[in-house]
Length: 441
Ligand code: SAH
Ligand code: SF4
Ligand code: F3S
Image (tube, rainbow, N blue to C red):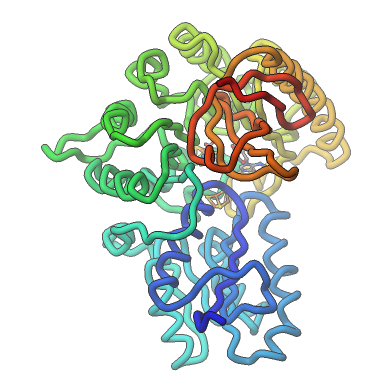
């Protein structure tokens, strides 16, 4: 039996939270913790939370409630809340849920081990500061954990765009880019640990402008070109981008950078210029389409993904129709769509709200259209040859699952020795959310 203390982690929200959870696991592994899949075994429970919509935030409280009995049985169990709900409602969490020992925000989680000690001494600990010194200087090395061939790497954090519906500028703070050197070092250490695909992360990743060795600001495209030179790295992706920061050098990179994959998540939220303005998106539907046309001219097979909000305050039937029209024009291979959710403290929360049943109907119509596009694009892959990076074993014996360059999940009969390799696969069948294929020799 291993004597290591057990850490149970549950992560909500976006990929940046997934990355942060990994970093917290790494920090705590240096304190003798190892990850467990079962909360009942844990010495510490860590919830890394998301505040983006009301339901996401409420989930945290119901989840915490479920640990009450466990905590009664094991008084030494430590419960920590991290992430964006911690940032937004730290004090409130402490007040509403006495079983919580630690609350830590997205910019101060490098202090998690210290907070654990503080909580042991004083009962509870909270740190939701935006410290002047950045956490990455404390988190330099990636600790070797069991990881697959694909990894996330946060290059930029926070957001200065202040879309009228969004909490991110408040929970994650102002836009900050990490230095090129820091990112290159982290990428190299991931590659040394067997990673061959890196997804660069940022709430506004294409607004990246980290300093290079000469003290000059580097764009995301420049960073991608630098990563492209790293031996052992085979694939580069990035998410999430804002249409206004889709600069010409980044558009060109999609056509010319060999390791940059032909998939782009480019949220637009609405197709109505009136609503886009009210959302403070600072671009029109036409400008968005123009960016997409340029991207497709550079890389014709680019698969596009988007985010949509239905029922934003004051959205009329005509506004909603404009969103459907935009979707029809773009033809998305993947999409995420949400009913507008009121977020206290954001400008849109104070406005005339759309009735719930109308939001529900619109979401239904919009998702039907998106799902039809997604299915059609997926079906068009059948009989094509794609490149698949095998990530893990599949559900059935002898089967592996991987991702094509277009980020489609592909199931293939293949030997586990191929995990971590990129192979040519001929697509044989399209299922509802994945493809089947056969390995080409
Ligand atoms: N930085 C990214 C994504 C931020 S949050 C971007 O700029 O696109 C992810 C998605 O959640 C958003 O794209 C938006 O579609 C959705 N979202 C954000 N706030 C929301 C709210 N109040 N209600 C419903 N959906 C929301
Ligand atoms: Fe939120 Fe808008 Fe910033 Fe994206 S760009 S994180 S939607 S404020
Ligand atoms: Fe959620 Fe925070 Fe990400 S609010 S979407 S976890 S930045």
